Length: 360
Image 1 (tube, rainbow, N blue to C red):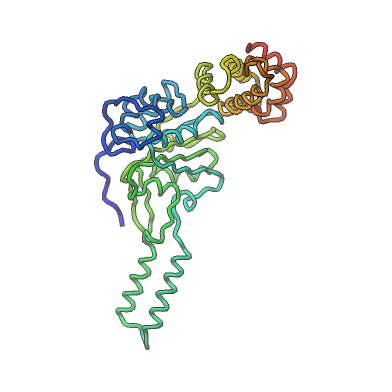
Image 2 (image 1 turned 45 degrees about the horizontal axis):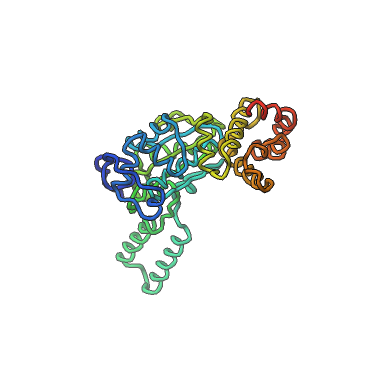
């Protein structure tokens, strides 16, 4: 059975009231101590600056362009399509958006061979079979001689009842538009470029109309339109029909100041001088011709590792004074930055020492 068409569009913020003027921001401690009111949730997306501040409070730093694109995706209720190299924070943005709006994160990880049954829905065939067997036993227990016309009608009704909500197994895409949900979730369709091209056609109805048509049941529509984030590492081109339904943004490697601030928030124990030298080294390393350039995730991992190494310094020697980042330490920890053996062998030794000197 089809649901009635949705009413006028409301803002995509997972709260009940429209986006309004920004209210005074709560501290991180206050955010953790209590659930935000609808007005506070609305205020977090009142402007690109407010959204950027809400994300930064949770450790995710965005530039003005990404803040604007994410803000418009919320206001226009359009999916957000993010492309970029691995490790630049595409997937993390969806997770942090769920934290900002205090809502559920539903994640669909794409892979080759992914189909509708695994992504959207399938029928619970074992339960349907049990229902048929139970119906057959009732007929056998109550029937004598030929089946009456009433029995035939009951059988037809029973067979029709096999395709109803009770027998429907909801996968991530259908969960995201569940009309029973009290607020809009964040739907992350991660690494869409890993799925087959045919799978993209399954998404067009969902991304365009926020609904899914089930032939046996009808069209199911979202009561609260989900915040949809799609990511791609661009291992293949995604079809234009899918991109046309989304707001597109390319996330590049961050500038020095942005990456420095990310490391400062993620690894606060690291001394500032050492932190700056590390980020400068990674930024310089990205200019080399490597099979896989280090992403922000690798920078943060490396910073955490160097913080542990710096903590092993001699008593009285301030951790992070700069001595921990010598060529030997860089050579020993290159596996946190580079993920291909050929890249590590190329950088290790003379080139690492040269890059370290240039980033001093």
